Length: 305
Image (cartoon, rainbow, N blue to C red; front, side):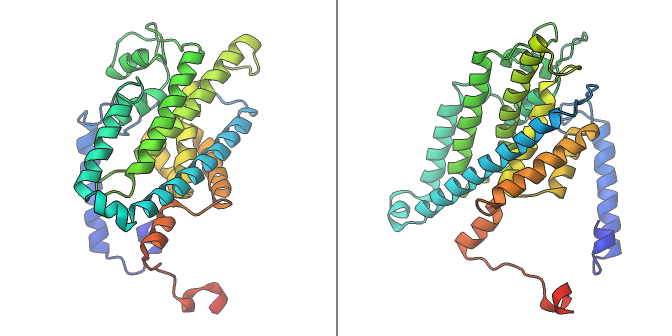
């Protein structure tokens, strides 16, 4: 994309960037740094076909992601505006604030089974399907430990206990991220948003799989991992308001090329719903901090030519 759209991008720099990417990919293919069987962080492999009516549920996940993202942006900006007050700054130094956030994160994460492991491991466990084949992996062991799969590699029924655990994990991580983003500690936004969306999507997929097993709404099986991936993309899209780049990111993270249409649908609806309520998290922080927007020059816009 840089080669096609950037007029002043040095070809020498582009060559070096391409060479570095090739070397990194080759090294990654010969190692197990990601802990997966593929090059991607959340590598998955699915053979389940989608029923056309399932796209309605993917659309609902997109709407839900837009609402959750808008709520997150609003609460995070309100919290950071409160942090900017002189009374708050006099009471808490940046180091004390980070220490309090770290302690709160530890105390609230430890009691729940889904929030206790590292987030990438839990996200991958929710994304991936249950594997009935022999040969236990760390991820399959975690899926059994979380109650997502049985020891025989089959999906567990969506019991009220499992749905409550997923919902509580999403709520706890949502609140943790609200109070963390904006502090002086280097906290990421992508992985927590993927985690919240993965939990919500897994709730929908698990409940739908249980209902389909008893009433056969769909002719084929329903895999909750697909809904987990779509939910993760929807929430991240609702927070960041990315569309095309987010779909590419999800494809690169999961390798799930067969589910590009659900990704596109969820990301698009999440952005549309979120934009009706507020701006994206990055634009809101730019406005709050008083940074200037780098607008396009007037002489290169279509209306001014």
